[in-house]
Structure formats: structure tokens, C-alpha cells
Image (cartoon, rainbow, N blue to C red; front, side):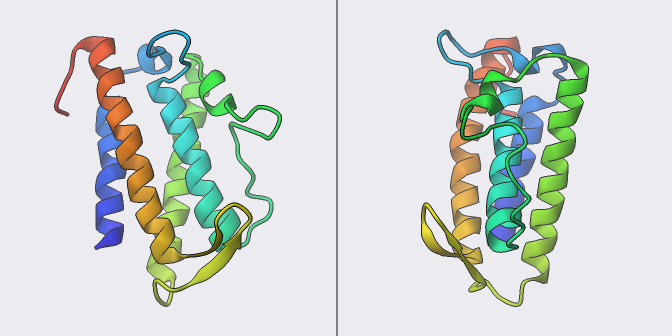
Length: 154
């Protein structure tokens, strides 16, 4: 059930971005650097963090779009360059693919690991957190999409 709700939230992000190419990096309202592409980059990093770095213990699965020196790089670095758009979607899809495989292959939802920020977290907690993360950002995506082309309700 949790994996299904998360899949729905991921699909919603894709729908919010569907049909947009050059405007994916369009900013919300100054001084915010929030954009649809920034959300894709951010969520790719969040997926990588929780599923690869924390739960799977892959220490090399560091963020692709942000860093301690540039914590908002996922949003600030989002540009309409076609290569940047492709890289963001590729990273997001790879992160989602890994997360889906990890969750499907886990023996149960009590698989746990330690996160320096949250302490011990279980797969169950991560799935619930990711549903919340996507739901919040899909709300942002609603507003961003409406600002770009007036589309609502997708």
C-alpha cells in the first residue's frame, strides 16, 4: 500500500511536468529559485539519500545536484539547457528505479538503518516520509505549472 501511494505521488510529479520543455526551469516568484526542474533535481537527490545512501548503505550515493557548500544547488542550478533537463530526469528515473527495487526486494518494512539527522529509520518510515515529501512538492508543482501555462488539475 505504501509503495502504491508513493508511486502515485511520483506519477503526479511526472504529470505536472508533462509537455513542458523550455519552461521547466521557470522560477516561481523572486526571490525564490523554485522551479519544476528544481523539484525533479531535489527529489532525485532525496530518493538517492534515503534509499541508496541510508537504507542500502551506499556511501558513494551523495547528492548529484546539491552539496554542503551549495545546499540549494538542486534549485539554484536548474537551467533550461536541454542537457541539464535530460540529466535531471535521468537521475530521477535512476533513483526511483533503485528505490522501487529496494522496497520490492526488502524482506519487510522493518529493514532499518541509521541516519545522522533522524537516527534509526525503517523502510516503513522512509516510504511514509517520501509520500509526504512528494505530496508537499507536488503542491508546489501545481502552482508552478499554473504559472507557466495556466494548466490546473493534472
